[in-house]
Structures are given as structure tokens and as C-alpha cells.
Image (cartoon, rainbow, N blue to C red; front, side, top):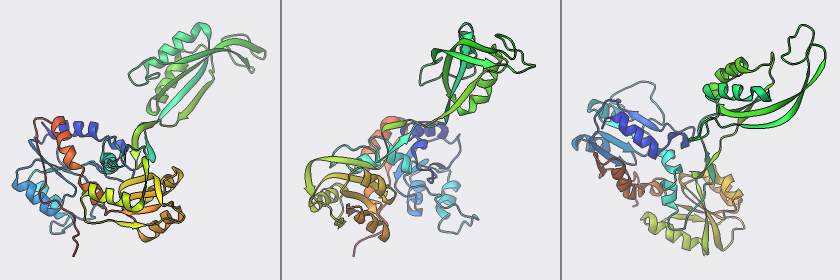
Length: 368
């Protein structure tokens, strides 16, 4: 497979519109025509991991964290921040990152994180991509089909796998043409009353000018009444940032912390008691990595305990003031184990590619 084909499959697994706006997900390095026979999975594309990939003749490094969080202002091949990319480019090693898109999808990093506690709902739902509009126009009954067909032919009325979708309802329109007008019905300076259909059709934002032009061409009126309404994106169920889990049985902070420790396979976690938090918790919020941005959503969802990787000092105090106890397990600890089950998922998605996990990718810190 070529990189462009593999990238298409990766975008189906990890839709990039689900990523946070600040997150430089997707292709970090590579060309469309690069052949991909071997893929390596890693949390971080460190220099050690890149060298491992080069030695193993890997063609694509799927790195959970983007390499280019803070793009350099100049490309110095000796700079340790750019050296992994320089080495990868010299050896035709492509790099692709799913990061927060991987967090948001159903069955992704966040769902893996809350696995011991049950199924969760997103704290912040993801939205269907693409801006859309609804065009409403008022048409005499006899001209309804002509106008609807003209709008559909230029891109209006597509909803999912359905085309020519519209809604119309009968009503009465009135108008009075000023001197010099040429109304299709009645005469200038006289109040006219006409039975009209209110026709509504949705369309992509980019198609609005073409659709309105076609509508005007097909419409019998000299000046048709047209409304254009911006539509809010629809939330995608079970997809988005963070998770809120309603526990089957209320558990103490220590019990939940031990469940997290075992699941994440770590020596220990840090905990804190929220102000006024209950001794046993029924609603848990979670976010892999750094979850502080979701504190308001977690509090609004009624969570009394928040599991995440890390929070800054004042973010911890904010969560505690909201009455949420904390379990902090370390940033990368809350992400690192997801590639074990996902190796099989990716192998099934790309059966002609040899997929393996990095042996040199590891937590940057160690306990002493």
C-alpha cells in the first residue's frame, strides 16, 4: 500500500475532525507515493524509537503524540528536537499521529482508560464536521417542483445517503410592488395575496451561492423571499472528549485508585479528597493525559471523582473546589496501554502491512 491509501484508512479509524482544535494531528512526515510494508506503534517518536524503526526497516511510525507540537523556526539537524524528524526523513520513514482524535473515538484511548469502571458517555460531545445552512424560500404551488429541482441539482437537499430531501408547507404570502416593479402575480402598488409553499432544503455552506443563483433562475418572482439559516453541527453519540461513568456500585477513593493502578499497571497513583466529596463515589469522570480543560464539564455531569494523568497545581485546586476527588496516574500512563488491544485492530484494518509495537518507547520518568 502507498502512504496515501494507508492515510485514508487511518482517517476512517481516527477521524481528524474529532481532534481538539489546537492539536496538529495527521501526517507529520511522508509522501503520498511512499510504499508502506511495515508499521510501528509508539506513544512518542523519540530519537531512540526512530532509530529502532530505521533499524527494523519500518516504513510508517504511528506515533500517538504529534512530533510537531511546536514547529521549529529554523531547521538545525543537530537540534535534539528536530533530529528525530531529520533522521526519519533521511530514511524515508513516514510519521502519522492520531492523538486527541484517538482519544475521542468510541473504543479509543478514553474508553480504554475507563474500562475497569464501566461504559462512559462523553463529557464533551464531538460534532459532525462541516458547516451547513438551511435555505428557505416561498414559492407559488405550481412552481414548487421547478424550484426544488433547481436547488437539488446544485447541491441542496443532501442528508447522509439521501438526496433531494426537502420540506414544504402551504401558507399565504402577501406583497405590494412599488412603482416600476414587474410582479409575476398582480400589478404594482396593489396588495396581493397568494397561496405559496414554504420550501426548506439544507446544503453545505460552500454551495450556498450556486444554490441561490439556481433558485433565483428557476423562481417566477422578480424578487423571491429567501432565508438562509446557519445550522449547528449535530453531536455524535459516544464520541468526544473525556468520559463520565455511572458506577454500578459506589466505591471509595482508595478502591477506585487501586482499580486504576492495576488497570494501568503502575506502581502507584496520586489522590486527593475533594471539598465536600462523598466517602463513596457513584459518578466518575476521566480523561487521558491532561484533563483539566474538562473540569467544568465533569462538575456539571455530577462527577465526584476525576481520573486523569496530570493537572497543574492550580488546576488540582480548581477540581477540589468543585467537590471532585482526584486520581492522578501520570500523563503517559493513562495512554500507554491502549496500543496492546489496538495492535490487533490495526492489523485487521491493514492485513498486508506488518504491524508491531516499539520496544524502545517508554515512560520518560522512573521512580527512585
